Image 1 (cartoon, rainbow, N blue to C red):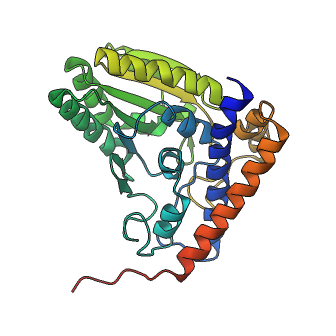
Image 2 (image 1 turned 30 degrees about the vertical axis):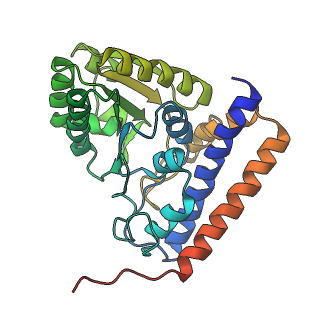
Length: 298
């Protein structure tokens, strides 16, 4: 991918990174309502995958959903107002960080529970012969949920146009994947007859290439696909609950997808992306602070 092609994708990743860093700061200041889970370090997955789908496709995300939303809609103002509990938020300030809905985009804090929902939407699109596909983002920690395997079975049997994207960040909350998950993540889906692929989730170009092939297959063949993207969560599971060794985090920062991408984008593009992101996030926060809170229904 050329620097010119990468520049807008890099800018979207910078926007997501800046947004998430601001969210953690706002939470510490008591300006958010409810909990929050950031996707620091996982921006390449969101941007790379969702650059390959259309706004007509159905996307299901999970508790770590901000990056997916911003990658698809480029709406930091609506998302920030939602997290700050204001009526100008994309769900009127009542959905919060984990429960977002806009058009064909849905999120929920129950990772395992969203997987059969995505399969149902894929089945509906197949019945309607729309040519649309469904995409569901899940984590490697979700692979302890039986409903995931029930969904894999039906998706294969019914040949559903469903793309499973596993953001394998190495942890189930605070438990390392190696301590709670046996065997191969990729082979688990292959056992159900799904086509699979696995790649570096910290390399934007690699993610986009893998996602393009997977989306094209699901759309063309009307069959499910299992895409495993290996990444790493640079921030805490939620807010301050992070007990990983400093040495491990240091090594992870050396593989930061944003830093790696900066080597392939021009210096003026990098500076412009940072300036634009900071200005947009500051404006979003300022607008949310003066917006009204929702009122209880009579």
